[in-house]
Length: 234
Image (cartoon, rainbow, N blue to C red):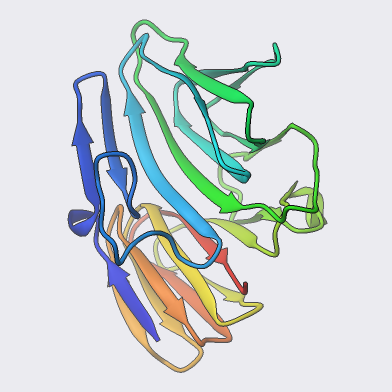
């Protein structure tokens, strides 16, 4: 089973300094039927105006995955750590209650665009505070994050696999799934998604889709495509 959630259906915000699209309930946007999906709590795409920032805030015990799509960001925490990331990089923060984190757009001319995921962390697991990977252009497939850091991926504190795909028009790629749930997100581009049961959905830029009780999903790119498949067996 696959069910689309279009970009138009998502929550939105426009505060001038911040433009955002929220897949699940977040901030002022609240839908009691969309409080997350399995261990995926948050999936936001946000654009910070030049020089804008998020002031310090604390998180529940989650892994925060930031995929930088445009610009350069600086992150600081209340323990004195600072890290920067630019377009083409992904950062994973192992957050802890009681520690606050802030985010800054370092450019005075260019917006900062990034996608952010929150994934519930197992209470018993600890990890490096910050991990970073570079996503070179034109890499067709990359395991972005996993429970054990396989294939030089970011290591999560949960049984979740995050797959990153960049496909040219007409290219296809199949992702085998570990369990009954997954979420597909088009970062940009249009595609057709076909599951192992032959269920099919067409998605355009910014759309997502819930996948349930399927062994695999095949992505067929209609246009240049960048997408995430978030495998959520728990």
